[in-house]
Length: 192
Image (cartoon, rainbow, N blue to C red; front, side, top):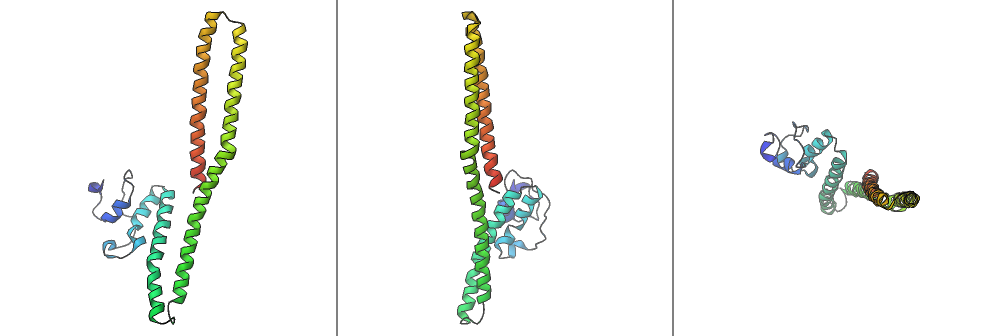
């Protein structure tokens, strides 16, 4: 994919883009990214591209990650200023950076907590409901089979029993597939 990139996209940006995404024209207005010493700036184009293609979840995760890395990388400079000036300068900046770091960490934790709520929702509400639906279907099939057996000749019953088993298996696979889909979609939705 990197061979097909426009010349104006630095390799660091191209390497942080997902492999299956089509790279479009440069969106970020940052210049000389290669000469800059910037954690967030190095990923600006990748974030812009993710936003452009509508992959907001990946863009948000990348923003949080790079923001936290930027803050962590900046704290030593504020700390060094405080030590060099014996506390005359840099205290406010250090407190601001630490507060920003805490806020980003809280946001990240909230994202993880919502994902855990999704897991709990699936296990306590969705899964039991799907199991109840499945059990009810099995019971109804057993009842229909018992009633049908009384009205059929043994050869007809044998053929009907195979059709019934195939139908029950098909419904079971469908319910299992839908449960898996609801489970993943719930986690993804709440994990945003």
